Image: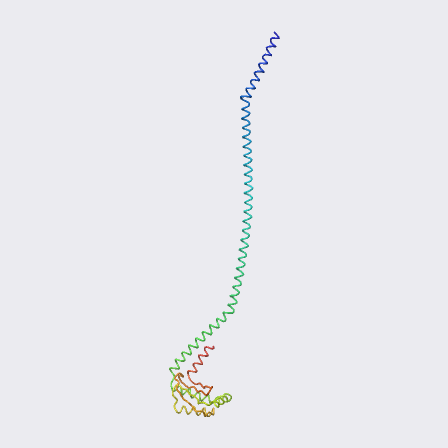
Length: 253
């Protein structure tokens, strides 16, 4: 009985072992291996995800570093451009200020030099215009007042001046009259009567000691008075010459 029980136990044990082995084989073949495969695939998937995440992180980090470097480069370029622009602006401003100072200096010098001249020229032009207008007015006035009576007055004035000449001037006129071989030319605006001619010839003979013959002619351009020509010397006592001298004085002034 005891041996039978022992034999039964061995049989059961062997069956249990066989069943266990069969179960193990079944589990390994139909369950464990697929589970391992699933676990392996899951592990590979997780590892791939981790690798992808690491790759993305590295790429993101590289992009961040690249972006920060680019920002730093842009900032440097902006600062350099700003500095260069400020230097150019300052250089241009300094150049323009220097050019402006030079121009103002030149204009100031021109103003100091030219303005007095311009004022003087303007003053001279005004004086010349005033004298010219005065000469024109005097010409119109004296032309209207000219006549034989005025001419006789001018003749008397000429004779009076001849008799009152200083000795040195009188000697010069006598020397010039002595060298005159040609006739003495007497021009008058109006015909001189015999009395006027005799008075003129007598005064010239007594003052200048001339014996040269006389030639009388009428010149209406003289307006009034007469002009006595002795060689290179001319005695003037007429309105035309007086007004001409006045006009020439205006131009010289």
